[in-house]
Image (cartoon, rainbow, N blue to C red; front, side, top):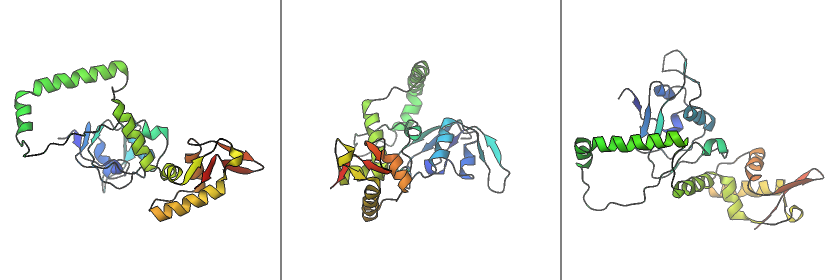
Length: 225
């Protein structure tokens, strides 16, 4: 128990709650809150094991390197206010699509621990050795699909692009950046999405669609519906 924590990903970067990670080797949460992960920089620092400064309530600040692995269960993945590769390359989504109806076997975990713990440990060590040799986890294709869906679902700009625009091949037939952002603001307000600045809007849009600047006017290769 002294090496295990139960912190939500939204709380990992908090100066007080994040202090609990000192000494933790496994952070397990049975249900992830649905509120957004806003401090993505702090989240990335914790997952990467960078030095962070935290303090317990009424305690003095201290610096440490988080070492815990994070295993978070969720029925719905929380929104993320970060479209960078630096965030999304740090998360792995494994879907469990099977449904088990009927009466649950409440004694299953106890029997596995009593009768099969050696086999489970051997299975885990084999997977750990494979990951160390490869330098990465072995992921099913469904994981990449799930991460992409989570990323698009978290990015209001990407959702606006899909809902409100059609692509064109030439930027001269496209839409001025100011007009695109004005339409995004209206769409976001109507659909309950968190607004982003025009600078952030442009930064998130540029990797998704072609753009060009002419006579001081930025134009995107899209037309509004």
